[in-house]
Structure formats: structure tokens, C-alpha cells
Image (cartoon, rainbow, N blue to C red; front, side, top):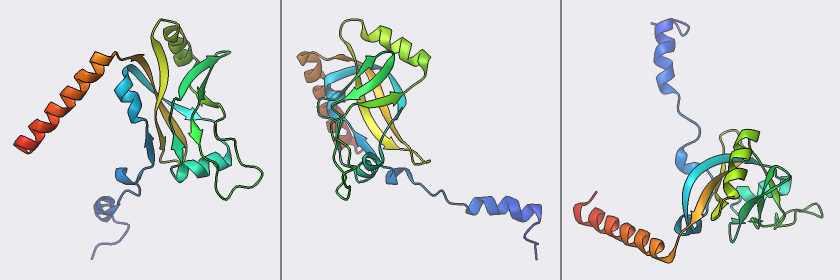
Length: 171
């Protein structure tokens, strides 16, 4: 019999540890329309400054990206028109659903993107809100340039041909 504190037993024990969070169980809210309307050159993950009722609403998946965008104000990045529904069990302390929310990034990243957005055609678009393993909500934002109508048709055509190939060959 091997003693539980024997090194051989401990090496074997690490194989039994099962991760607590599977990737499919993570909470993600994705802005699918953004991928259809923009080409993205660069992406960052930024922290969000949220109130308690906003966090509870996000945990239940009640957020909408309709017409949301990011802008700079005094060297800080804010997201506007991000609709987080009011918490159903909230009291008078409930948050306003369409308030501007501050994004947390490094100064170097902020300065780099502020210079890029001053160029014609570039904008910062929220792509995804997700819950990290530590329980914080983060937002993936992308520096994008708007697509023209013929670009949108081209991406739809590529998507359909890829889908047909996968169906035909069972990939």
C-alpha cells in the first residue's frame, strides 16, 4: 500500500483534478452585427466599470449592443449606447439602462487607439462581453473600419461557399 503523502501518490493524484469551468459554460454576449459591418484590424480586452445591479443583469444575459460604440473623453475610453437591462429585483438603487460606461485600458493602448480613431473611417466597436474565471466582466473591443456594400456581399458569398464545402465533404 502506498502512503497518501508519498511522492508517487501525489504525482498520480494531479491526473484526477477536473477543471471547474468548462469553456461552454462561460457567459458571453456577442455583437454579431459588428463582424458583418466592419473590418477589424486590432482587438483588445478591456475591463468595465459597472454597478452591482448591472453585474446581476449581465449574469442573466440581459444586454444589447444595438448601435453601441466607444469614444474618447479627456484621455479615457467610454462605451455609449450599450443597453444593460434593469435588474428585475432591484430597488430604487437600480441603474439607468443606457448610461455611459468607462472602459479600463493601459495609457499606452489608449494613446495608440486615440491616434488611430482620428484617422478617417476608424471607430472602436464593442465586440463581446464575457465573464472571466475570477468573476469579472470584460469587454472585447475592436478597432474597425466600415465595410462597403460590396464587401458585405463578398463575405456572405465566402460564408455560403464554406458552408457548402463543409456540407459536401462532411468537414
